[in-house]
Length: 287
Image (cartoon, rainbow, N blue to C red):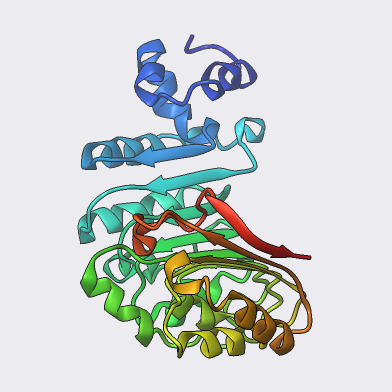
């Protein structure tokens, strides 16, 4: 199989999401082609990260065959906080010019070594981060990613990280100038809304405090595009205030096209719920 043409190798490799299975087919092919033929690569352990880095480093010889590349290479990271692993991630990203989406499942503040580079070869469209530091928007990486259209800002359950959400500095106007959609916790999202052409906002938050509602309405009123807003809520906190909230938000932002409010089960922890949950019941949707 080592002598198969690249077109044939693409067929062999691209129909498998199981890296070890591909190794069994042909160790040489896997080592050289895995990174060019997979849309998504998952790291779950340190050893997998090392193996992928070796694969990437050996793939340079195939750069003269552009037909084997996908237009999208998504990297999904799941490993513990380690400066050494984050440095290794930086090396991996330098070898993935087709990357358009990066969801990071570790604290952004622990990954600063990854963002020291500004010469990454990809044009990123989607960035997802679980846990952010107070200087998230001022990093060189954030300020040089002009092509990002969607940002997903979530917070892990770790109480130390959750305390950061109210101390995140608002980004300068030149950060994410093409941003079209954002989702995450209200305390984070409200910093990024003003002055950007955002048309979609999705919040999964327990915004049941009285002071949270006017802050949210004020932030939504500063966007520059017609909005489609989705809000997750606790029915125990909101069932008496939905009408008043809808009236206030409609008056504050006349260009809202869709407002969707949904519940999650009362026994479910809203703070740890996914940012794009399966709605249990759509309480109100106005278009």
